[in-house]
Image (cartoon, rainbow, N blue to C red; front, side, top):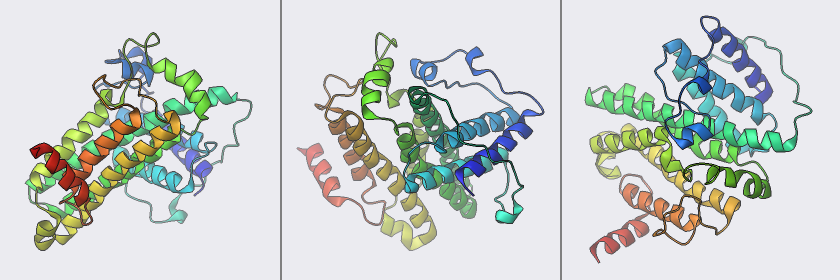
Length: 317
């Protein structure tokens, strides 16, 4: 199914989900942080119908923008897979049996007459909203995994681990989607809107509650599965592979964040970087990558033991 066909199909889903009740007006809900206000994200109790509708709206906006965004084919596939998983999870639907099961929908024509600068500014927000959706869905999937493991249901845990991995693989794809704008435009028109005086405080990923929930869920999962890859593979090979796939995706997300930052800001400091941190955003993100690689070294099949040994030496020096 093409991106335009997928956008049309999700548009039909949005229409169906809107029938019982229209979407909550987000701007009527107070923002709990500067980050929520800037990225047009809100946190509020929703019914199942409203949660499904708002999730579908994020996917729909994302797909419509992907019709024009110059995203690589590989990232397009990863982001689309995350969107598909999100639609399945938020609606409780079962995967389609095949292309023939899809209903025909009218395919929208390419957008015309939208100024490039307006499209770029909207894309920055849309891509980040998809990323937030993936964060929240991944946090739920990882928490579900831990729940099933605690109750001895390994099959259900494996199913939710696979879903979580789809979302985490979509993290860097969604961030690249948001960043498919000219670097010069980002530097001159967007970057300054995320720091004082445009905002009360500099915005950073540390302020995204969805990502905090995901990291907390990952910590809980690893407290349940602390065994090395070899130890876990000896007693539960499928679980070892599934855990490894999730951790590798999480590590790759950190690695791609480094390269994305370099492409956008080169060796400048981040707008939210602490004074005592490294000299630039890339160096700080690389340290985060190294810490994650050290943590996961024994838990994945091909761990970065060089980094793990170096980090251990630093801790004991």
